[in-house]
Length: 115
Image (tube, rainbow, N blue to C red; front, side, top):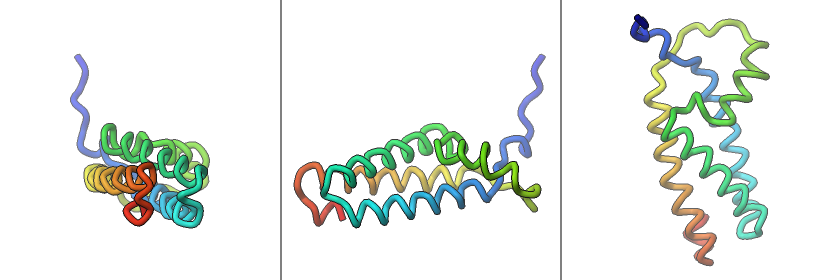
């Protein structure tokens, strides 16, 4: 019989969501500088997909979380504490909503709405 997952095993390293937020900041800065050009809209669509993954599955399953786990986390010491993954997941949901509105704005020519 399988044991239930303990509370600590569902906790996440808080530096992972911080890394993801940093990458998101850079992505949005590039989008603001390049949109409504195609490259900016494509980058916004990719970020929207990342938000959708984070909202649906959890921030620990996003592509940026994978990069953190494979490339960055092994080079760091153990975290001082672990955190509940639900607040970052909620933030991913909010980001998804805003990025969907921005994407719709750019795709329909409403650049101000996209911005």
